[in-house]
Length: 93
Image (cartoon, rainbow, N blue to C red; front, side, top):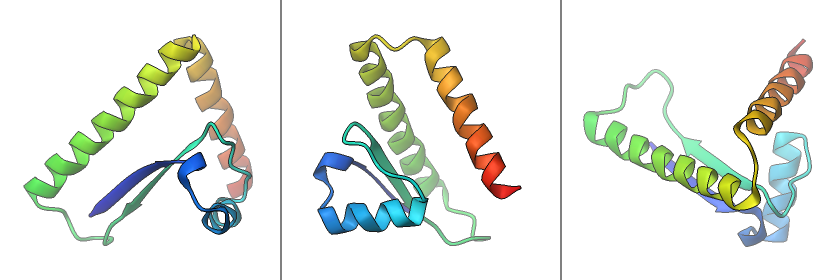
């Protein structure tokens, strides 16, 4: 399994357009994109799981640091997650 996280500002313009088309929404310069490649139904070995966990923890740490720098409260984060979940659910209905 491979994964990468990139700032939107570091993504080539044509790649950004492709991602926006794939995601069905515009990307903001303040966004980051996290992409993971995996084989369905193939359980990863312990080393891959440990690497994936470490990568996710790094992403979470960066997100937490960014929220602290921007003065974003836990409540605002929770509200944003709830709103995103509502939008995703409404698209699937």
